[in-house]
Length: 215
Image (cartoon, rainbow, N blue to C red; front, side, top):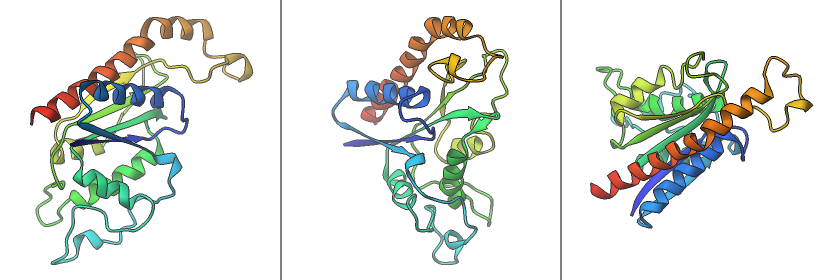
């Protein structure tokens, strides 16, 4: 049985990022029942970023999984044994959410050796990075997963990107002070692209599951 861990770094349980991740899971499940999927919502957990405790760097006891104990610890341990990893986040102020960035600190810092600056994860695995954002493809300020993405690429493998642009921020624009946005233009873009975006996530799920079953 192969296992894929899906990390939802968005705050809303039933909106853009969650929908994309759900479609990814549907695509993976459509390939085989021999692929187990587990979704973790970071906003449901209480945890901290790297505490600089250096427990992962102690001589003779160095580890590539974070040793700090809180609600994130079992998630990180599961990822270490998983076969595939999916990270999903909306883009706020050009970056992934604070919860996602905090998670990635805890994930990646133990991989980093201060002896030779190599990056070594417990195992390599396919990775998909999903982003949802208000920006348009030709006009956005997204740095995506930023400085953490090279760490992921070196330690786990080059990630696949799935991006949904110009997503709805709310369901009813009349209720909010959002006058700089045209709800009509948003709706038109969504009608043309949203189902395609969901299909991209679904297809990415299929690809990951197929690749895992081939290995």
